[in-house]
Length: 464
Ligand code: HEM
Image (cartoon, rainbow, N blue to C red; front, side, top):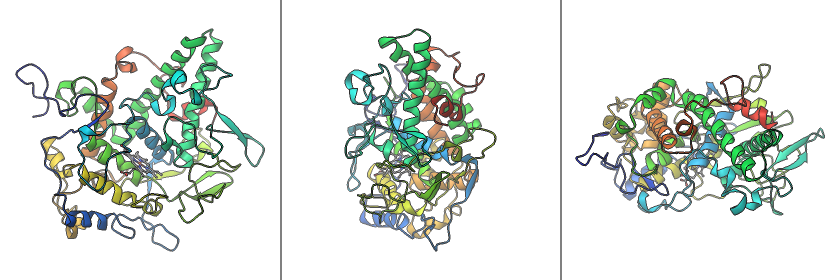
């Protein structure tokens, strides 16, 4: 059982592989949700196809199924994506064949330390840093249509972003959020330089403060709103030895999180956004030519006067400007996600479902039962009965359905919330540099009182 102490006094590891560099399993004892047969693959492709059960149908002329989430503004989707890119990156596993998580390298460290921003630091990743201003990131500027200076990440001559993780230039919102983190670090450098710090100490201290504020914001804002205060608190109160997420030396990245639960965010994406007063567009339009310098969509990898984000449309930065809302977490995905630019298959839903099969993930019902959470009933999953998935449901789909029926799509449900809370708490508690271990009584200094939200971060960074 989870949390049982074995005879040698050690907790039984959940994964054979105990090092942080690999993926592993939370539920190694559970069978896969289905056999890897052509029939099951076909059913997954059917479930995730264009015009299938998961298609939100929000193309022009369609009947959109993309309800507002009254509890989360539109920016939280991209904050979630940004955090994902800090934790997990699997550019190598195959959709076509079985993968052993313990043999797959995670190209990100599973800790909340912004390695997607810092790369390997100024010595080993010098292209990210500004040689004229020691300790600072290189940030480039351009002017918007009103003549105001706007920030962009540095880019090479073909506009490829020079950043710690290429995925942070996947769309304009996550790209501008990355820029906000660059400028957040730079603003801390300015603050500390004003207090007399210099050289290596200045960089290290700014990096520590940026990381700790980010961790604070995740613990006090992002996580409680995504998984629910109650689930987060109950995981926090559970002794680490009694937790689901167990490891021996350092946390690994569980596939149940990376391939299922934390992909909940794909359902929060809207078909399009207003990014600033002068520019609103669909998120991706795969029919526009790749060479278009300023395409009429919100893809990343471009620089043009209108391509910047006014964060007031995404987060509550000030009382006067209510932001746009995100989409509820449910089993529908916005239609542009069924036509990803340059991917095969192009449907993100099919990719997630097939990836789950290729990692032999257990069903949502089996994971819920193992945690003594009441599973969704076959009636609640009746829409996937024709595909044979109502009693043993692919976990990514299950977690979306659970959020929809148990939490009105406003946050994750009990299983999804538990997996996400366990992994975040485990990752933080397993990181000896995290503030909760180094200085448990630490409080943020760049917010208001003890409060530090993403709104404070954007303001301190000077981008909102
Ligand atoms: C426009 C927004 C987004 C796009 C286009 C996008 C696209 C993708 C793609 C193409 C993959 C790889 C799929 C595969 O082949 O298995 C992926 C993986 C993933 N996505 Fe997203 N995503 C978006 C937003 C999000 C959000 C909001 C979240 C969470 C809040 C998220 C979480 C993840 C996770 C956890 C993975 C697995 C990462 C790994 O281990 O490599 N994504 N996404």
